[in-house]
Amino acid sequence: MQAVLKDAEERMKKVLATLDKEFSRLRTGRASSSLLDGLRVDYYGTMTQLDQLASVATPDSRSITIQPWDRKAFSEIEKAIMKSDLGLTPVNDGKVIRLNIPPLTEERRKDLVKMGKKHAEEAKVAVRNIRRDANELLKKKKSDKSINEDDQHKGQEDVQKLTDSYIAKTDEAFSKKEKEIMEI
Image: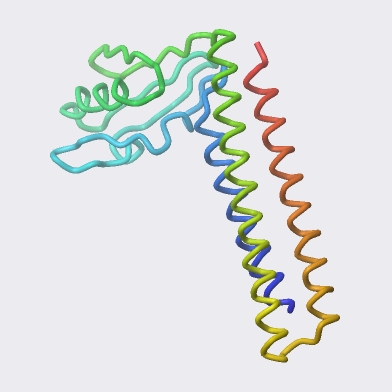
């Protein structure tokens, strides 16, 4: 029974970690190098992560600088940024590519909050699916007679408590991100 709980908790932790990663990609009013996480660039015919082609820095709260290690990568990095859904325009001065982060409009902030809410809901669904899997496993163990009915009910109660705590953590992460996005 403990193995079922431990497995469920590990899987729920992964869901929360994935949610945090998704939230880090949501643009707030501040510059962050995590905005470019997952940005892939066509580098000599191979899709390559940006952080493998260049150093990314945030010199201030309103800009990001990208310094490619290979001069031939400048145009491809610019194309990848333009194609992405970041809504940012790169400025190339021959040495570095600058991304100026404009202040978010009220409408864009609301859109970002909606996207954050969608990610949070997906995380909650994933947590509930893990709960369902754990409960089915407990039922199977009862039918195999490896645990009795009381242990099954106790296990299901523990799984429910675990689920409630992770859903609360998801809500807490979303409200924190919502506050960050709506902050001017």
